Image 1 (cartoon, rainbow, N blue to C red):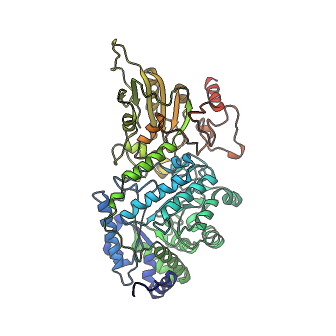
Image 2: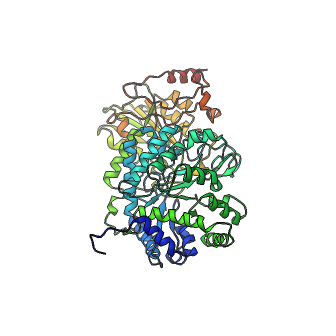
Image 3: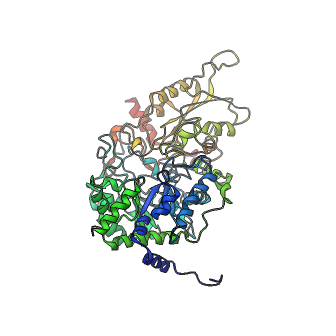
Length: 608
């Protein structure tokens, strides 16, 4: 074909391929396998349609170069098959290309929700896409479109907030940033439908969990609260959606034909493909054959196996040959998968030559992340403590989250559950404070707040101008983070008390994936800041503490006074007295407006 010829119509190319495919090739396209469970030869032998890296699914060494080499090897094997259909490689890049050491780690969605800045969120999506594409990856399992109704859920931080409109606006912004124009990376709005609204104790993990539980609401509520983000995602060009582990009134979403086929594909007109969650089909029925038949017939197009792919391929082949899964359903699934692969350009795109690898963790992306951190901070209390004075003589810094990249990044960072310590490259909050503070300010750090050895010129125990205690949650993900209590640890509370005694002004910074019970620290401290899970650019916190950037963030979630209030009954939420939440949705002070009746109420309730 000469260079001036019109390229073949993608839809015609899809139909041409489909007409030439064997059943084995079609079922291979419907199979998504974790990279540690297969090698490139298996991609060739079984015509595998997709490969993924789960949380922690990185190559050795964990470098951008090794990622590109790994993905390219799988892709080359797919292109060597009879029809040369490329794989699509996917990852959970939920706050940056977060499996890659050295990538830019942005604030988790809960922090982005606090910014209320759709333009910024779209830029974060575009930066994430650029780092993905540098390593040959064009499919991202994000964003989460769940308006979370119970913050005890371990995935709360993956949500933009409790409000459907906020989740819709920012979820769409992130999706548009990822996908771009022309299409760069496939976004995967998830988890369809009703996650974030499951009932505590209905999880398969037991009575003290809610992840993968049952969403027990009527259809009107389901449509009003949870469906709108997906309507907008479909209307804006989403080409793949991930179905939820959860159930709706007892029926697993992975087998919910009404919601997947009738509503999503029929009523909403979704033309992309539906992918299962990790082994999600397995949970539909104890009989694996019945589980596969039910899920595929319900409308799941690609199965994230992710390990025993041979079993799935054999089972689905047997189901088609027995007539339990119609050939038309197989063709529909493969047509949808191929359509998305053509749309993102996989048939015409070179996987990568390494030329763009320097974009991973680039200075430009880190500056964007630092801005996102600053805009995400929510000022909960400020009694003449912030901004920090430029001429402060001494600042004591303490707390479990003060000097720990892993804690401030949270789950889904390098490993599935995240980790503590120097798990990747970045700036801790302590390092940010040290860099932004004046040159004449002495900054002392002691994790537990034991500053007794520091004395003034007269030999007396020193009093700091400011004490900054940075506390919160250690990393977690999914059901591992389900938590009925949401309390600061005893160690964190003790550190706050110690530093209070040694500081003229005390600032408490809460690093967490959701609101926590902070009634005692709130009354001890002169200022309290919600910093969420800021990621690798801790200097963004310091920028606001020193007043270089204003506080603009507002709460994306109602803040609990005690765990006994959960889950909130939002339709009948008290706004008066000690039965009211500590702070309402949308609350946030500024340097210009730092008084609130909510703080007065907090003091009254503490006194009583």
